[in-house]
Length: 292
Length: 215
Image (spheres, each protein chain N blue to C red):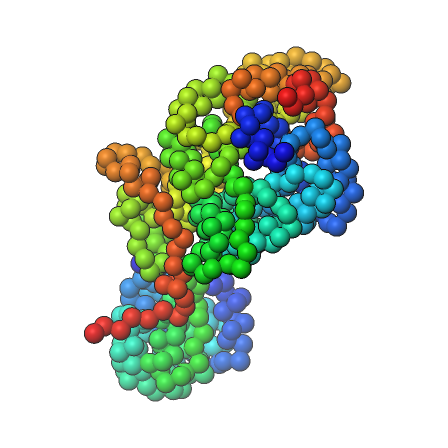
């Protein structure tokens, strides 16, 4: 079953994020992916994550596809204008990549080439609109395509945004523009997330809640201070602080597994962002009771 | 107001390496307000260049140097001083540099300033960019705050989701303009404007060079 079919069948879905390497050595990322094969439903491939120049998302998606994975091609509007974006979507379709996650993307100033010219010819909503058009057989200016795409488009969502109303309005606009599923920023506060879900229950699209493994109390505090929409509650920071360093990994997995179990009753699935801890994802999934 | 900043002295001296006699032109409008090309800055520059063995053939603060007729007048009034000079140092915006060149029959003109942006003049020497001259004003849709300029990504369809504590992900010192737009539209009872989906912009309106001909 494809990701689209799985989400339609209301099966609890697990996706996991993978970041292409800085360089041409793909051994590690392919190994990481191989471990996850059959354990997750789809693999998100980030697009120059954090605006750091790396191997491209599309090629990495293709490598994964040929190895039997279901990739989600993350596509930001930061680096490509509408010509290149539409062209890459056609390319993805030809390579058998069916899922695209439309993002605006971090600003180049945040990455390792701050001198780069930011593009942002389109925003994520306009990109979703472009995908919708390509799926219907025409491009953004109405020219007919010789062979259309059939892309399952998704978008991102920040349930911890403050204020939340403009984020919800944007979510509605993403849905209208063609988003068929949402993946969220990391969720730590389940109660707060449940309240958010109530607010958006009129938006009929599956939501995969973001899950991040907390490597240390310092990481939690750093994210609370610096990462938009992340709010690790004090109780969780205390919990991870309560164990010795050698037990921190176990504790981290325990916390994330508990979060996943709780999310199973709340939303369509989870989206795991390992941030370097790809090797722990399997233990996490086992601790969370598998993907089903 | 066109906001400018003086180039560093070393750069200016490099530009003037082959030139001995210099005419200095300033601007009575924007560059005077920015303290980069007014009477005071021109005389300081003249003094500085004299210290570096340059001969100043003359100076003038043009009102304004972006006006072709005014630069032609400048040439007439200072004909000998300009003809005698090896080059003009223009302490004016990038537009003024070129208009002075046009008005002085192609005289060699060096820029003395960097042209930064179109901005608001705030008190105490603060200049804030407010408009990007995008040729297609959206301010009525956004509560009077320009997201093209005030959002580093220039987004039109709402916040990128990267703001933390109301501050922009790119620069913690600036407020997320999309949160401000939301708050303002909310206050004005115009939240429906935030719900509108703005299509991709038509960039043909911004292809350089732009021109306008009054009929």
